[in-house]
Length: 187
Image (tube, rainbow, N blue to C red; front, side, top):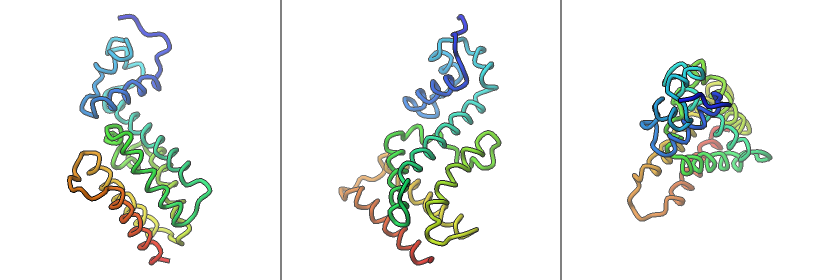
């Protein structure tokens, strides 16, 4: 198979994300990406060392997308409005890209490739919480609580785990209010 002109690491990651969106992380293989990009599998080694590195690049892209979306959501807002906007943007990302979200690394700060993107996402969250006067470990704990609430709810929702008839938006709004009440109690 001839080398596809113009193939770059970014285009390889684009193809990998398309596969993840269609088939989930389980469907991401070097052979599938090679087929999608029109090259032989060994040609991918010019762009990624192995499947683990490709997954790392996919994780970076997901983190960057989320950081960009969250930044846009909170721009010009503060306090409760900013936190609620961030939480709704987070849930919306998972709703729109449930399989892609599954490729998000759970602990990017301890991975050399993903650290910068993970820090960028964390900084958006920390900046959103600054209006509550949280610093140091209090800010970290508040960020973790936010992540647990949204990740837990959105993950269960995207897998079809909420079968009762009550509205999911109502439940989520209750969680957002509960978290905001908690933050205001920490002032």
